[in-house]
Length: 85
Image (cartoon, rainbow, N blue to C red; front, side, top):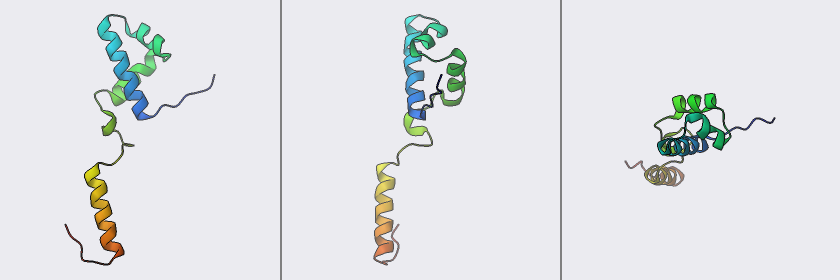
């Protein structure tokens, strides 16, 4: 069987869907079986990613303010103008 690697966003999404399923009543085993993941994998993901949002993971996209700041700084470096804060 091939091993499947999930991104942090996919893991957080799966954790949320399992949590929603658990509020409806089934046990963790049944909710994991529907998602085709092992119960042990669920608990490991919950320990590592539990309570996080997708934008809080390491691979998240930068915020718009940060992108704008980087564009401004790169423009000043290219045009050799003094740095503005």
